[in-house]
Length: 518
Image 1 (cartoon, rainbow, N blue to C red):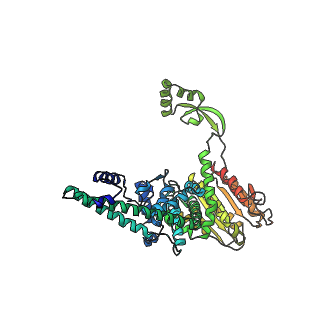
Image 2: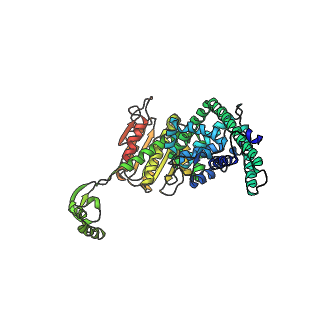
Image 3: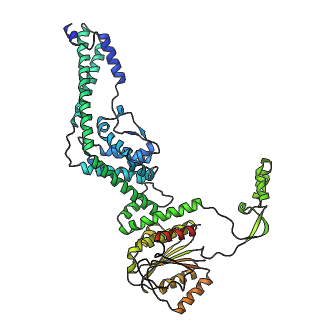
């Protein structure tokens, strides 16, 4: 009985058994390395993208931060519309005390809102943000000394296993009761109690050390997050500029290859900064635009063009009993509607953009290509043919043709990276424009972008003007004359000229693109 007296926490075996039952019911065995609940789809997407990422394969088990699972949780937080946290009791100690405070610091940081807007429902940007953060943080912490008691995690794990074995002994003794069972069982209960105290003490020390460690690496977390934001903005810019509308931000082989190619091209990265913005302007213009009938009303005819229907016909839709009459007349093309007399609108046909690639344009070449490719985007959406004519001196003229549905993103990027250098000659590219119209570019919408001055002969100027009238074409000139004197060399053949000395290149692009996309 002296043994039982020393076991002062319990007065009898019945109470000890009740304590153990309550302990086992409330005890949760940590089994997850993840802090957030995730859908199977999100996990499959992440696993597919990280499969070839060998960096995480070298993660050391004794290292405080589990970079692999931290990246996975951050991907889930960015990609998923709703963030659902797991019960802490079900999370392993390492992730609970080291990964969790890092993730919490990210989720409460103002920059997380920026990341969330760029990443939600977007595979590529979400992965790039998560992997960039985890890799950068691991790199910063790789050789950084730490005093955390990470080994406590393994000791706690061993103690929990010992508790499990003692519980098993108690259950076996209960199933096969023997003489002096109380004398044999109470020491086992006492051992469990003491081991639980040891575990609690170690967890308290581990939490204290972990908090100190997380505080000490605050600047590293901040630097890694900053780099993740920069990388995500860049990826979003690249995919907005160069990605296909159908491909979006999905992790396809084509998009990953495109992303890698653009990242390794300084010129394409420079172009992307403007092109992505201009593509968004075009998209917004189309999304918010409304088509109104144009032309002079001069007669009544029959058809099924609802935009030109008489109001008396549309009134049939106001009542259920006459709605069927409207539908029948619509199917039979017998709705009364206005007939309009509309003049041929010049410059709304196929597009030709002449890009000056003389040496002096090097500094503005990225903008010029971004603008030209934004025009290509408009042409593609309107099913128009598009030609980009690169020019410099008289002998340096190259034409890239883009017929709807017959070119790839690789073709576009090759055209973007093209650059001649040298002097400037206008007659050669204008002659090429004439040739394109003669070969079928109808009602051509021609734009010339240049920073230089080049005289053309009066005979050629007259010939070009007559050709424009013949083929119902228009010519818009963009003269990049900011900080440099330029003459009036575009006036003989341009219907309208924009000067960068008067408004910025961005303002020029926005004005023209909004007009062309309408």
